[in-house]
Image 1 (cartoon, rainbow, N blue to C red):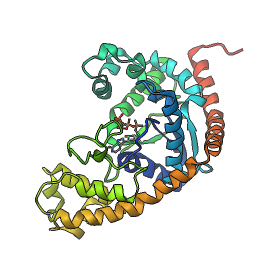
Image 2: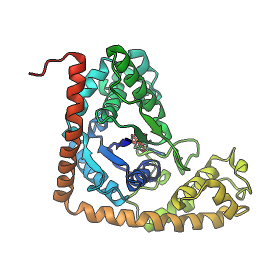
Image 3: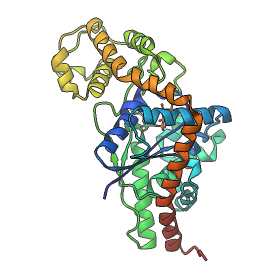
Image 4: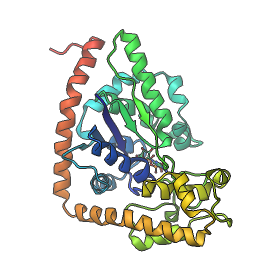
Amino acid sequence: TPRVFSGIQPTGNLHLGNYLGALKRFADAQNKGIESIYCMVDLHAITVWQDPADLARATRELCAGFIAAGVDPEKSILFNQSQVPEHTQMAWIFNCVARMGWMQRMTQFKDKAGKNAQNASLGLFAYPALMAADILVYHATHVPVGEDQKQHLELTRDIAIKFNHDYGVDFFPITEPVIEGAATRVMSFRDGTKKMSKSDPSDMSRINLTDDADAIAKKIRKAKTDPEPLPDSIEGLEDRPEARNLVNIYAALADLTPEQVIAEHAGQQFGTFKPSLADLAVAKLAPISTEMSRLMQDQGEIDNILRRGSDRARNIATPILQKTYDIAGMIRS
Ligand code: AQP
């Protein structure tokens, strides 16, 4: 039976890319009746320095974001990673399965470590093995993510395959990445060749899920574009990354295909298309921001949700970790 797992780092500035590439699709999976487990990956967050008070706040805000985006903590399991120690226990096993050469190929490490890789944390390097543990400690079969996580999911498959092969078992499933829809890679509003990102210093580069209607409309109005009108077919967007980005965002927000959006808006100038997009974005996103701030007023309730979710997660993870230990010859007496 299919089981979905995915996670988001509580590093603040939850944005439209996180919503369209992840949160919205998590709610869709849940609403299709697929068993779904969603995690605030606080252990991943500290691979780069996090101020403790900011981390706690971002974790609660992310939990509010999940719920506001339609993830129901009664239907799905919603929890924070550090409350389920089976993730790190499994990660150690996977550290011993994964090869140095595999990890060295991870482009996200190279991007995040920058020029001074010697000064990056060991955790940042090992992070994809913890991510494999996050997924496989639940025997998850499907992982909805944005395009940027593709390489890490391939590593997860490699780890499962090597574990099964080394120990001569058919234990871990070979997980399917689910990277689909019009907005698997939402781009920055300042530069159509860079992905929209939490850590971009320019607030105008992204729509935050906490932005109000005015901020959303203003950011779309000011988004970088070229001077041409929208083309009359999708091929006409090929060398126009900014235009393509806005069409993709429109499509994902409206649950349409980019082809349908182009059919409706062919020949329009951005002076016309941007206000339509802004209206749509405000209609879809402003209620999320309002609901997030409402939920954030009851911190105790958010903490209760995380604790209950962690208990439910542990009920699934514990037997899978124990079986893994048995396979590896670890005595449990
Ligand atoms: N621009 C994006 N378009 C589509 N999906 C995206 N995701 C992130 N950015 C985009 C998806 O959101 C989920 C959460 O990823 P994460 O918690 O690992 O966050 P992140 O990748 O750290 O987010 P950022 O904004 O990309 O942060 P920085 O600035 O640190 O690089 C994942 O499913 C991801 O694919």
